[in-house]
Length: 201
Picture 1 (cartoon, rainbow, N blue to C red):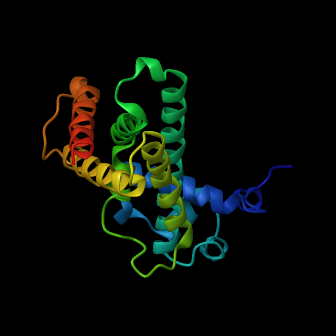
Picture 2 (spheres, rainbow, N blue to C red):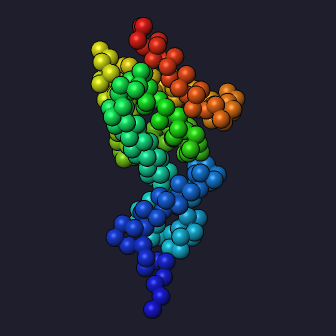
Picture 3 (cartoon, helix red, strand yellow):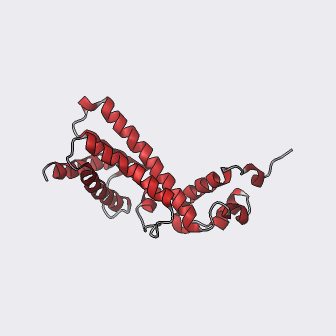
């Protein structure tokens, strides 16, 4: 007996399927192409079934971007763990590894990175999961700054994050032209320059 697409998505699976499909669409065409109705059709369920999880585009986009921040948080956490394991081999500290990892994320998932740093989706504050995910990712930078000995770890992390994010966004948009083969080297140099400013402020 075959199982229909609609029957496959139950007990929360439909929400996950919609988010995964939304991430695919963002990677290909950006957030403007997101439509709950179209994605419902893509995965073989009714719009009514999908609307039980996401009544509109904004909620689905927010959930997809929250997944992006959680992916980033995992990448940053792995980078900091590596810095602890090889601290003697690393001269720039944990924040530098955070920067390199953030650069790798921007290179590997460029469309998602740009969507995460585009127009603010949660202006009204109704999508708490997005705010929580953003704070989880940024919290990795705060923890790294604290471990690196900054007197004001939140301030140092915020300055580092914002400056590097700006550089990465301009590069991802092609406004700063970087040879793809030189990307990691460029991110490393940018992160070091920001850290130098923080250390000498």
